[in-house]
Amino acid sequence: MVYGELGDAALKWATQFEFGLTAESVPSQVVITPLKVEEFFKDFQTIIADKGLLSESVTNGFLVRKKDKQALFCEGGIGASAFADASYILCHLKNVEEIIFVGTGAGLGKYVESGDVHLPLECIRLDKVLEILLPPEAPAKADIDLAEKLKGFVEKEVHTLDVSVHSGLHATVPFFLSETEELLKDLQRQGALSVDMELSVLYALANHYNKKAAGIVRIGDLPLKGLPAWKSRTYKRELKDKVHKRVLNAIISHVFK
Image (cartoon, rainbow, N blue to C red; front, top):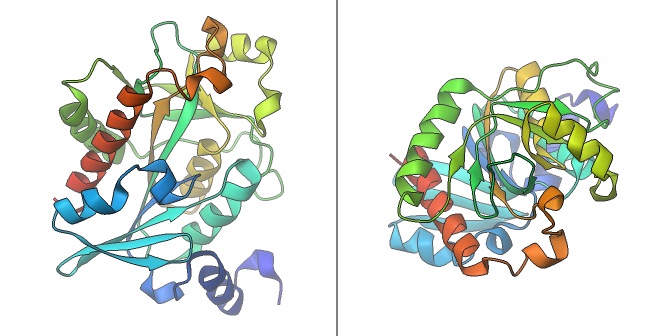
């Protein structure tokens, strides 16, 4: 058994190990975040219940359902390498049609502020971890139709908050400490509005395996404006928590519309 080929036996084992589900039972729509779902979305269970949805715990996440419609909300792992495993498995599952990424990133654009939301249409690939599978020039783009639908729901949810919703270029680096000032300024010159450590991995794999994918990135630190990561955790905390909840509401509206 060659695990990297993800033949039937390997895919069955990998899906059970990563998500606690059989390959056949993973639903068509998946929402994935680098962190644990309940850690990323504060009051996740309460919001789900208030929406009239049911949830069932599985490995690294929850199956959320309403009547005969269900979606998987799951953890993908922090960093490009860890996130690649979960993304690679999902992109091999025949049932999976649509993957929505939700994460946080640093703001790079001149008009991007902490608490804003970015729905990237394309990624600059500096992730490195996929070079065995895909050439460096392999595209990492969102499904435009899915991204536009999600943007509409997000804008509707956050319009009463003091945040902006952006759509543009994003960059993914392999690890946190690779974000030097020189690199970030170069990415800014290229037009990148934000940077993280996961999204381009999903986009590149989804493009290659013909899956629909789109990302929602909530902006945290602003390294080129002097707001570092260790301060951004408390800066505008209440606003950021509200944004996360509104983003979850937007995703639920899309999935269970």
